[in-house]
Image (cartoon, rainbow, N blue to C red; front, side, top):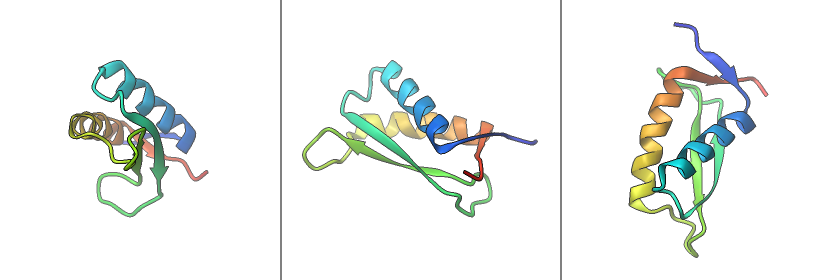
Amino acid sequence: MLKETKTREQLAEIIMSEARASGKCADLHSVHVIGPIDREYTNWDIAPSSNHPTRLVSALCRAELNVILGRLQAQYDLSGD
């Protein structure tokens, strides 16, 4: 299956929108899309950042991001931006 490609900015925007809508990521400040990387199932990943002083995202938000990320990585590849 050929995946649609998105830019880093587009992917980050989609992830942040879905994370905010979930209600589980109030501490999420930003998401940085990393890639391209060499993985069997995807060519990108994320580095989330929190509003918390340690910049670590809560466990509840990390779990939600994993669900969002798995679904989006199955749909989209990172464009060659």
